[in-house]
Structure formats: structure tokens, C-alpha cells
Image (cartoon, rainbow, N blue to C red):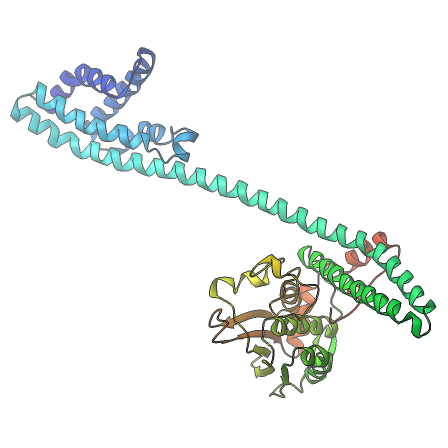
Length: 424
């Protein structure tokens, strides 16, 4: 008996056995039998022509037939069906044919069925990957919407807070002017506390506005020539008081390139470096040391801020540059900017990175890890393009200056600077 004759003889038996083994219910069995008839016809055609592509249409339909629940539960339905078809085919052939005819038929069709299994597995995986890609895309879209909404909230909240805070500041100032005489010393102390709180709130609101500008690509840079040494000198003077309060040491070193003139927004660069130094003070114990150093590289000036603090674990070295990135317990949040391990809104390093990147530079941190005993510390690297490279790079990163000015004018009734204090 030829292989073709054997296939024709076994067809009704094969279809009946496979459909009964793999389905339940008459309606489902009837539908499945139609698919099996089609598959068997394509199997015969594949054997006669030697072209494996004949089965692809049926296998494609099976491979992409998984329901959403099948995809979510990783239920490989089609490949299971084809695998069972191979086993049932071997059983039918052995039951219905003598050994010689069975051997010839199986030798002819098992390679075809095995190939069909690999094809249907590939189609199933394609369907699963497409489903996962769709889900990832939907999740990414939701995250982008949430991030945009958060940025809008930050911007609106900061602008809305600024007006009443200005009123409070004005009235507190007028009250301070009215307080006179030694008997009013207690009142002066209270007003000083209010003024300090107002200054801190101003700093937080300005940070919120800066984060909003960075997120919406509206950060304004005033590119001018600036001298690195002058900037470092201002930093040294700015931090004398907080360094003294924490009984720490701040060493600002001269380095090759520190006397160079570069192009950039000096106030914004000062703000970025200040935020990094404030972070170093906060996470360095009392009597610790902070060193500002650097070096000249081809086309760049690198400024480093090294501290003898508690360090940063490897998994947190990216997190700290995200807005609202917080390490440790929120119970440690402090209204001060230099309290040891004190918390805060988590905006300073995010703003510093945004400013550095707007200048065409890079900001990153190195640390052996978190250790409050060893105190290995951290090194923050600020890489800025030198010479004319910074002017062109920063110009490319300045986005929508006019839009920013217009939005500020519309929101406040007059044009305001994005920050009131470069060291905020």
C-alpha cells in the first residue's frame, strides 16, 4: 500500500479520533472536525509536493487563535493541540496498518508534523510578544500621562502658592518694622522664625517651578562668558555658615582649567553646584570633609564634589537624580537643608542634572556603597563642555525661551525670574 493510499484510508478514522480526544461537546467537535479536515488535506498536499509551506495557513490560524486569557496565563493551546495530534496520529497508524505500511507512513509524515509543531510554536510566540508589546505600550502611555499630570500639578501648585506666600512675607516684614524695644525681644524671635520658614518655602516653590520648567523643556539659560574660578570662590563663601554649623570642612581646590573662561548660565551652574554641595553636607556626618576639585579634559571641564559621607548604594545611584527621589524613611524629612540625613522634597539633584544637561553636560555619581561605619563617601562628577563647545551645546538645549516668558507673564501678571536665589 502506498503512503498516499494509507493517508486516504486513515482520514475518517484519524479525524474522528483526534476530534473526540481533543474536544468536548457536539458543537465544538463539529467546528474542530472542519479544521481537522482542512489540516489533513494540507498534510496530504505537503506530502505529495514536498513543500512544507502548504500547512502554513492552517498553522498560522491556530498559532494566532489564543484568547486574551490564554495569552495572560501563558497557556500554549495551539502547540499543545499539534503535539497531541502527533501522538494520536502514531496511535491511529499503528492500530490500523500493518507494520510495513505503518513504518512507511510514519517515516513520511512525522517530519512534516514535527515541522508543523515548530511552526505553530513560533506563531504562538509571535502572538504572545505582540500582546506583551501592546500591554507595555499601553502601560508606557499611562505612565507618560501620569508624569505629565504630575508636572502640571507641580507647576500650578507652585504658582498658586507663590502669591499668598508673598503676602505673608510682606505682612511679616511690616510687623518686624513695628516691633521695637527690648520688651519686644520675644516677638522678634517669633518673627525671625516666621521669616526663616518663608525663606524655606520660597526655596521649595522655586525648586518646584524649576522642575516643571525642566520637565516641560522650558528651562531658560542666559548664556554668557563665565570664569570657573569665580564660581568656585562664590561657592566657598556661600557655604561658610552651613559648613560651620555642621563643624565640617569645605576645601575648594584650584585645578588645571579652573581659571578658564567658559560659556554658560553662571546662576544656573551655581545653583546646580550648590544643590550638590548641600546634598554632600546633608549626608556627611559632623566633622566630615567635602572637597571641590576638578580637571581639564579635551573639550570639557570636569568639576567633582567629594564627601566623606555615608555613601550611596549601587541601586540608588540613579534614583537620587529622579524628581522626588527619596532615600531612607520619610520620617527623617526636615525643614532644614543641612541636617544630617534629613529629608526634603527630593528635587535638588534632579534640578542639578537638568541644568547640567541643558548646558550639554553630564552629571553622575560614584560611590562604593552605603556604609555609616566605613564612611566611604561619594563623588559627584559634573562634566561641562569647555570653550565655544559649551555655547553651541547650551544653545541647542535652550528650549522655548519666548514661551517661558509668555507663560510667566500670563500667570503672574508680570515677567518673573524662574528662581529668586541662585543658591536655592
